[in-house]
Length: 245
Image (cartoon, rainbow, N blue to C red; front, side, top):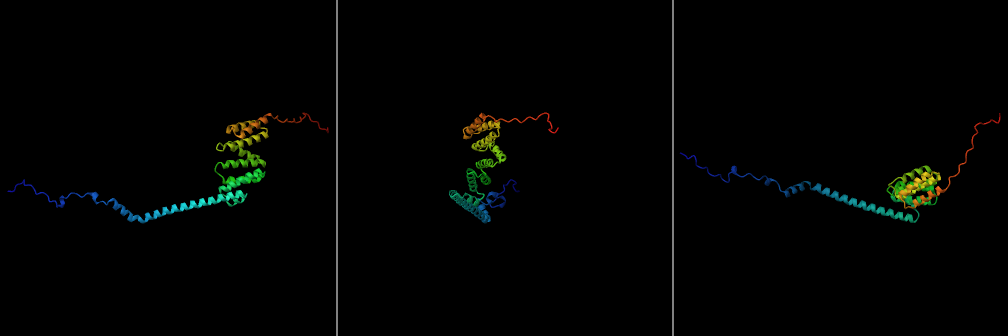
């Protein structure tokens, strides 16, 4: 009779049913293998992208060098035209360039000094279209307004001067001069209350400027000058007689 408690023999080490489970991580490819596989699949695309980046950098550098060379040539041309009094030709040849605007501004100032106010207006308008960054617009608008005053365009000139005087973004010198010309207009028209107001505004804008001194003198002189006598109109008789009666 067999013994029911006889132990079974130990499992063999070669028995596949008793082998330890395989490590899942060991079956995955390593980092170097993944990199190699990615490179093999995408190397052409990567090389094309790198070549495109390098080409873009080279082209950008070439364009910047070309622009710098062109700007240098324009600057040299401007200096030569200024020295030879040929800014009109320079402005026409480089229409739209900032230095062409500077040429128009210079020509406008020269025309104003020589009393050619209509030419000054045209040149100031051309400069205004090209010089759009501060402080040029305010400076140009001031010259344009004063030139218009000299040609009798008082309404448009006064509108521009008021806008400049009240624009806190403008330079103090521009605002003070604009307010002074308004004070002159008011004084000529006998509006002494406005002269006082504008003089106070100039003192607020820039109390140490020459325009403040001029405004103070203008105010003092006009206050001391007696107002012109107004001739009384002849009275109309209450009863009129017809000479034919």
